[in-house]
Amino acid sequence: MRWIIISQSIAMLGSSLVFPFYLIFIKEVGGGFLQYGISYGLFTMSAAFVHIFIGKLSDRIGRKFFLLLNSWGMAILILFFPIVTMVWQVYVLQVVLGMVGAMQKTSEKALLADFTQGRGRGAAIGRYHFWTSIFSAIAIMLGGFLIDLFTLDLIFYISSFILFVSGFFILKIVEKEM
Image (cartoon, rainbow, N blue to C red; front, side, top):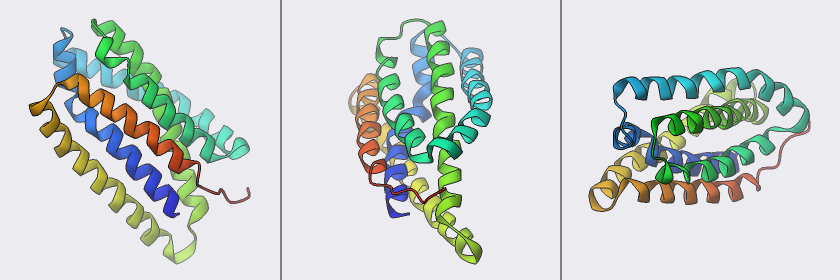
């Protein structure tokens, strides 16, 4: 459970560093609130269609594989944002990010269920969400600070690096037999 908390807290640090400032990015490539809504909607819609398949596959392959694919996949995909020049490119990235994001959400929940049981399950999941939320909050504040000092592009690079590092902590997770 410790490695799940550490790996996913670091992953939240990486993703939360950039996502709250996403609207600023959309504006920089010529979009507005409508394009932000469409973009985020595409992310959520593509994730919705993948959740069912990931759930079934994670039962067969294991959850760790999909968490790793999420961390390293997000790390790569986020590197494309600084070179995006048009809103349609953001839409394409959002569809792929939604699919990769579904891997994390579904596998994370299943892995938490695998590692917790009985009366202590709620407390264990509460501790997990405490730490991932703390890291997310730190990242959001840090992201604002970094944008003021540097550029929006820099937080995409930092976010990518942090997500990549989180994958190494995922490798330390030992899954229970299914």
